[in-house]
Structures are given as structure tokens and as C-alpha cells.
Length: 121
Image (cartoon, rainbow, N blue to C red; front, side, top):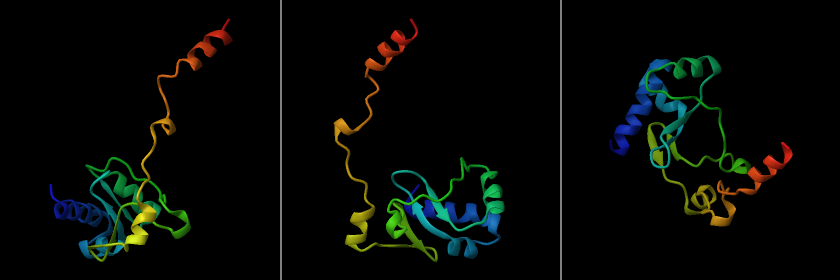
């Protein structure tokens, strides 16, 4: 599926609960087609419940900002049915920073298991 087909799918999905593709295009403010698949849109709680019940919709989440200070999202900006390119400065603010290996959680840390055994004695 190419980028335009994914966007069309998002618009058609939202149109099922808001009534028209034109209205859906106006309500969608971001789309994600690379890191994860989904879109952000302005809808009320009743409409979100209807959206959640559609086939192919895995879940509906409340807004979360990548850059809360500027109310910016990590996905592509979407305005009236078109992806809008960010300025380079704005793009840098929302791109995730690479993690260093030592910053990631380590699931092979055995010390917590030995501590748990000690506490059960």
C-alpha cells in the first residue's frame, strides 16, 4: 500500500462515522504511515466510540503530544486532505532522539529476581 492509499483509507474510515470524506479531511490533523499506522482527528467522545467499533480499527487513543510546549505531534501534518511539510527547525523538534544502549531498559537484569527470592524466605 502506498502513501496515498493509506491516507485514503484513513479518510474513508473516519468518513464512516462523520458522514462524508470532505468532513473527514477537515477533521484529520495528522497521519502516520511509517513508524506506526494511524491518524489524529478532532472528534467528540461519542464519535470516538463509533470509530472504535469499526472493522479494522484496533483502538482509539486520546491525544498525546511529542512536543507538548508547542502542541506538536510526531506524525505528518495533515491539512484539508494534504500532507503539509514542516519547516526544518520544526521537524527537528518532533523527530525522536536515538536512544543509547545504556538508556534502554534491560530485561536480562537478574538482580531483581534474586532480590525477590530473598524476600520470600
